[in-house]
Structures are given as C-alpha cells and as structure tokens.
Image 1 (tube, helix red, strand yellow):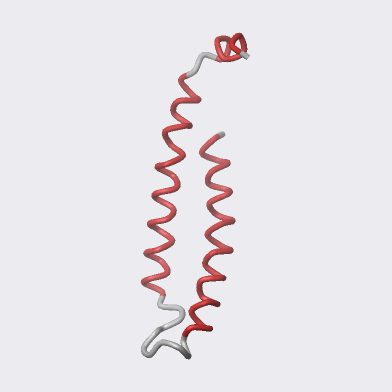
Image 2 (cartoon, rainbow, N blue to C red; image 1 turned 30 degrees about the horizontal axis):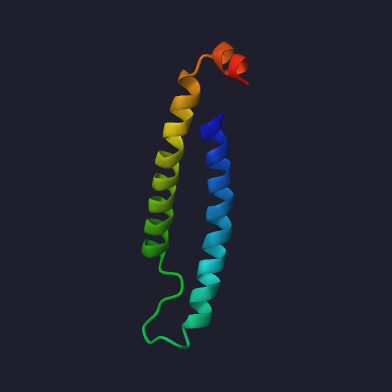
Length: 77
C-alpha cells in the first residue's frame, strides 16, 4: 500500500515535472547556444534516476510498516 501510494505520487510528479522541464528548456533555448530542449536520452535518464531514487526511498518505510505487528501498533496508539 505504501509503495503503491509512492508510485502514484511519483507518476504525477514525473509527468508534471517533465512537461515543465521541456517548457523551461524551450524558453532557455534562446539564451544558451546548443541547448536541445527535448533530448530524449537526457529526459529518459533523468526520469529513470528519479524513479529509482523515489522507489528506493519509499521501500524502507514500506518494509518497516509491513513488519510491524498490527495489534502492537493499535495498542500503542
């Protein structure tokens, strides 16, 4: 459940971020010589790295949440 929620937030963030990054690169094209606004290799590598880091960062809390005894957690709260 934790990983599913993290993946859905990651998908939304990556979609919005990719659109904004390409738009920002289009605006900066006039300022920087040789800038390609939508280089597919760079965009794909950035998306992949962000996705891997986000899923690894959410894996450890998900593993911890799965290992907690539900009765002990309810008793503590």
